[in-house]
Image 1 (tube, rainbow, N blue to C red):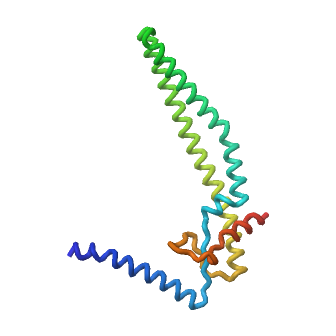
Image 2 (image 1 turned 135 degrees about the vertical axis):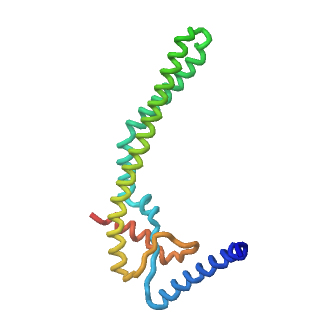
Length: 175
C-alpha cells in the first residue's frame, strides 16, 4: 500500500498543477484581470532601492574598512610570528600566539556584529521600499482594474502580464 501511494505522488502533483492552470483560465474567462510583479527587480532597480543601497554602503563603510585593516594586521602579525618563532623564547611565542588569537576572535566578533547590523538595516530599508511599492501597486491595480497581482511568477509568464516596470516607474514618481 505504501509503495502505491508513493508512486501516485507525481500524479497528484500533475493534477494539482492542471487544476491551478484551469483556475487561472476560468478566472480569465470570467473577466478577472491577472498581473505579475517581480519584487526582487523592484528592490534592485527602483530609485528608492538604489538610494537605500548607497546609504547602507556609506553607513557601514567605516566599519568594513576597520575589519579589513584588522584582518591585514592579523595576517602580517601571523607571518611575523611564523618567521620569528624559531628564535623567540617559548614564553614570548605563547604570549604572542594568545594575543593573535584574541585579536582574531575580537575581529570575528566585530565582523558578525557588522553583518547582523547590516542585515537588520537592509531589512528596514526593504520594508520601507515594500511599503511604498505597495502603494504604487495598488494605484496601478485600481487604474487598470486588475483583480489579482501575483508576486511569484510561474514557470512561464506572458510578458504583457508583467507590470514590474510600471510599478518601478510609479514608485520612482511617488513623493
